[in-house]
Length: 509
Image 1 (cartoon, rainbow, N blue to C red):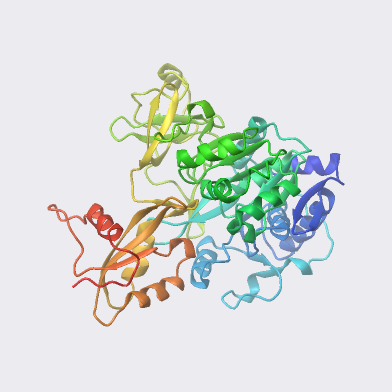
Image 2: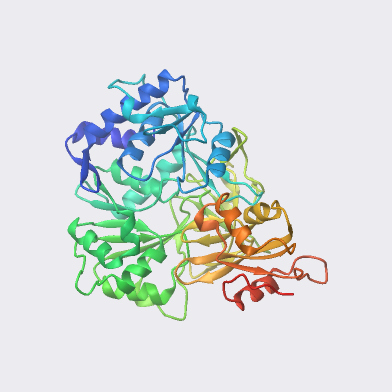
């Protein structure tokens, strides 16, 4: 189902440009043919519809070929972050219960050889056609988990298709568009690149990784490739506005920019808006479990440096509720994920309900009577985000829980704490969020440990267990962690202590 628009484009314009990566180009017909060969290889391995297949490839042309091959075989893909330590990758492979791992070259040392399929070794072939329904799983995206381990968000064909179609219509994508792609495929942002863009016959241009650290070169690249649209994170766009030399590189082809994944500081957004006056700007909002549930077309006239921007209006036919007591945002709609994937099986979202508390502020564009009369065909998902509704627009006020957002990545402090607490010599620890204008938030670590352990020991051990974005940016050793009178850990005090102390191995005695 999800690839139907792409397949239609292959039939209508097989010679159109599809993907561009560092000078390498591939057209729609070639992309389909390569994907079909790998899909046939998966079927020969015994992979059946609905079974998970991991993708061990960096973002780029080969990864798209592999992803589409998995879908053509009727399976669902599990994209891996190759920057993750081997132990984390091995956990994901085992937890997902994958039947195959697609990659190139030799089998990784940490992986069982029987799962590996070298996509370069697959001969030309055609897979057996598979009928895929909307509720069939398309992807499992692993994120940081509050239980101390990574957990997979299971996305159906219907959920991804609903978002892609909505986004395509909103942005009026067409075959002449040239869209930049920087989102890793284990981010839900990538579903726009893969299915909205390639579903309308446009071309996808992969941003070279090195350019994220060189904004002047990045703006030149955007200009040279005549990029007309880009979906990325605010931290990268802020960097582009600040040091991208946009005064001399006006990016006249750029129709739109979409940002999501973290809060965009309003002064930085105003700077970007002023330097790209012809470019439409959009704020997309929603956790991985909902993809995008809110959006706001940026109104330049309403931007004020001392006020945040709204998350806007319900997106993609989502229905929104605000919990009466907590202010938590509840969502249901066609983009909602199917649940969490753990232990090789699908599990319902914790806290999900078919009857949410009704909101004082309204029901996101539908009346209470309409809601009461409509059949309950989808569950409601409590997002953990605290929001309000004013003048028909939703506003974000932070997380109810402890989850952090770091450069678009979702980080659960509990997962870092579980890793640290398991280390010899550690008596206790706490992880909190430290505000960072360049990344949103970064994890900060406070810990109590035996005298023979050093912060350097902890950092080295974490580097072997957790990805770089989950590494604590500050580490503070305390004689004891602070507690509230009720016996609970005082996270506010922990945060204040870490903020007041520069990053170091300073030891408090």
